Image (cartoon, rainbow, N blue to C red):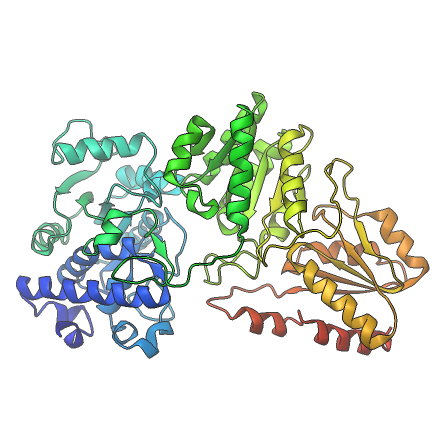
Length: 588
């Protein structure tokens, strides 16, 4: 096996073109095998194998710098830079992450998992090189729809006129984002593809770049020739490389959208090995929103390139017509557009992952909340139970969003409450509203839930007790139920259990009432404690004799964590909390 002899880019340079072609097939087979067992980004990694080989073959990495946008296409890069064992040996599969990681190798320049960043990062490397007198090549590799992101445009716009030296931007054009591409930029890429790069209308030339076109971006020899001619070039250049997403695996080539990221699957069929058969909140909300759209032309759903996280299939998107809006990778634009739609009398619903909401803070604050626009925002994967990789963890949203004035941030605890909150938010016109999508399993309400949440910050007492009050927010409400039951069983008294529902405010009347027959309040929240929900409760009781114990997550970046382990490390366990209570209050 050729790959077994490759430990660095220096070893790669000893191969001839035919051996590079064989190597590309070995790498592709290893990607398919590993991802079929572990899950991960499949199509994006398969599409850039030859491109990755050519880059390391021509350039003198790690001295020459390669920045991969998103870096969800870095598997081949890792195999060629000393980490092949994590693909050759199944017991070592978990030794490397799914993204570039500076802890793993000097070849990895950044820990990256969000899109549209590579060009700006490469600009920084280039500027530093030119100021400090370096001579290395700097290459940014961007694709999978990332050019539609605002940061990508800003980087392109700047580098085209303000970078004087060597900078190579490789545009991996596979005609796909996560779903299909959207936006006028991609229309121009198609024109360039159809004309073999010869069309006069050229987005990159208009920004000041020299432009090179590679029609067959999965031909390693052609790529090596182009990059060899560009090595050491003294000005910015864009290399437009046409590739096939999912190249080499028939199922991925034919199903680019659903194989962008996959769970473990059967190679022979492409089908998921252990599909979840129970109820899922993504499908529950999808069906609810589709029904709302069909019944009311004012309702529209806006999603930035991630329709799959709410299970909106291509067929359903087409059925919903212009009331389903994919703004491509442009979260900031999507939020601002939602504000404009709300101003015009529409009922916009914007949905994306919690970590992607981090990009929209300014738009939520400025366009939506200062103007008090009734936009509904669905915050998905905002939970310790959701994504566990470093760049996609969803535990920072409460601290980030709950302190924006005018915003109402809600945390449902079950199916009926979730849908009631979404329905209320869509139909009301008084507040901007964000709603945390549950992630700890589908639970049903034991009694009727409220339909109107306009009387803000009214907590709900689920079980009346004394001594200890448990205020359990959102996904941690079920932990609160468990804790209440164990306190009653082991401590001999019945605590009060409260579902706060509102993240953005406190129920002063209810909290004041607890002072008469409670001496301890325990808060549970599925997010970091610093700047979070529990601190609001602690601050309220600051001048009283009430003891308050806040439970949540430590402020830290986690990577590929074990949920059960992290929960216990943060004392998010009913038995541990009871022991803590005993230490603080003597058991009651």
